[in-house]
Length: 121
Image (cartoon, rainbow, N blue to C red):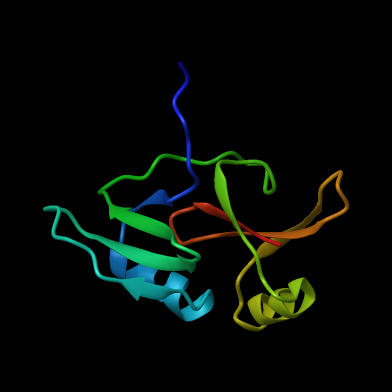
């Protein structure tokens, strides 16, 4: 009998500097922090809406990423206006790549300070 998955709960990223990552996720992406238990290592939790969360876990060394800017492990977040989001990223000096999947959906790809990829669509 297969396991029954009821839905998505959270995604986790490794970061080497939790405060630097928090500045990006809170200051650039505007995510709201959640209370986080003390696990004995640094980290932050964020509310992504609808019961979904992003968990940042502090580590001395994060794994590398691929060199292809639109193809890597990632999370995808919805935004209300992709073009306005692109303008805001550019204004903040945040590098991003544009993509358009076979579905025709316009996407922006940005990396956090540790190289974790975030797709904005």
